[in-house]
Amino acid sequence: MCGICGELRFDGGMPDLEALQRMMAQLARRGPDNEGGYSSGPVALGHRRLAIIDLSGRANQPMVDSELGLVVVFNGTIYNYRALRAELQALGYRFFSDGDTEVIIKAYAAWGSACVERLEGMFAFAVWDSHNQRLFLARDRLGIKPLYYSRNGQTLRFASSLQALLAAGNVDTSIDAVALHHQLTLHAVVPAPRTILNGVRKLEPATTLTVDARGATTFNTYWRLNATRPTTTRDETEWVEAVHTTLRNAVQSHLSAADVPVGVLLSGGLDSSLLVALLAEAGVNDLRTFSVGFEDQPEERGNEFEYSDQVVQRFGTRHHKYTVPNSAILDRLPEAIRAMAEPMVGQDAVAFYLLAERVSQEVKVVQSGQGADEVFGGYFWYPLMQAEAGTDLERFRKHYFDRSHAEFLETVTARYHGEDHTAAVVSALLAAPGADTFLDRVLRMDVTTLIVDDPVKRVDNMTMAWGLEARVPFLDHHVVELAAQMPVELKLKEGGKYPLKAIARGRLPNAVIDRPKGYFPVPALKYVRGPFLEFMHGVLDSQACRNRGLFQHAYVEKLLAAPEKYLTPLQGSKLWHLALLECWLQLNVDAK
Image (tube, rainbow, N blue to C red; front, side):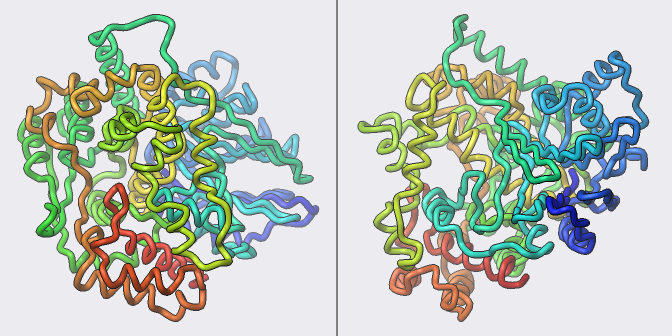
């Protein structure tokens, strides 16, 4: 829920309130229900609200507690806010609202920066401590909610989107050469703290940032995922039951922390279908589900309705099914790209964007199945990596990197040549302590780093562009911690995600459980031809692209000549990767 922004001055000057207004205007679609601002001394805070919990004006933000000298702006949901509220009341704190925002204020007053360790949910927030003239920024453990910032010698600005910082002005928009390597090698994943722009950074997941009015800065990582076996052994049945209990609790907590109806984005795959089954198990009677499909290509179907329809029939949900023609995808593509906080190449970005538009007309909150494949080992490349010989990097790179370093050098112009930055970052992540086996290390990296800046960011951006909050129970940190301790062999059994399949057996149709792994397909962005090829050709042959000088012309011409020939190991279009990045820069950077 919501969009947040703010500015802290280090030079004794007053914040630029016009810049704050520009940031809030850029964030309006994230929070259509209310707008608020706060300014005092060196700080100014802004907020756009999507009202989910405590729909009254008492929960509007920025929320000020004059007695405690604290002000907060908050994006997200704290699922255990009721339990924390009771604990804080027992400590003597008095509440004037009924939602989760005020719980953050009181938690910060009671426990200081350690308050984040008690919060269960998805969040990005800022607390201004007027007594100590200190700004405290925090992001949730799995990075579900975004938090970008820019800084110069006099000012720190932060916001829920990169575009909001650009709207504020005075941002270095030159391309970060290291981030560019990640962008074109890790299918648009640029691990925090970098972004594609030198002047914008993002707070890492599970991290807090404290800045005082003189500019002194402290970062702190408050959570790390441990992927080692527990001292107490469990058999297969006990593991499955533990996952069932923990996931059911997550689904229920993600449901109950809302004063509005909650729906499900039902793709027809195991993950979202299991959410429907568990919500039904929790006693939800009037469950709303939503599916979207696209035009087929000869090589690939564009929908999974045959599976989602079976789930709808099994549970009698109030279902909404949408079919989007290719012409609508192409017409709306620039609009979806403009809504991306960072350039994202995943085919399903536009799918989620168009689906969220429709869903937002029915509900304000949905549950979604993102994270299940990474947490429970569902992707086809995990067994392939497992079977490889060599170093961790060699085993991972062969099946995951979009292009080799040599091809990267062929792709971009000489000014962006350098070391193999992506190999260095991935090597360091895989070498970190606290994981028993190679695949433990891979899955930990996927969950804590790669998923953050690919599917999770995609879903947040595309749904919040329509004032729709997407909740992801498979990324509840209790579920993630439990799964990380589970033997890899158990997760990979029966083609992956075995614990989820075992839970689903008897609850879902067998056809949904035993079907081949599916994706959110938009075939026209994979098999690039016709009007889509013309669109990408126009972007990459534009004067803006030539002036920018990112790509080597010969490489672009090679892809344009045979776009369907050049796919990544994960079957993504290399031409689309380049066109998306250039289009994003034209729409979001050049236009500012």
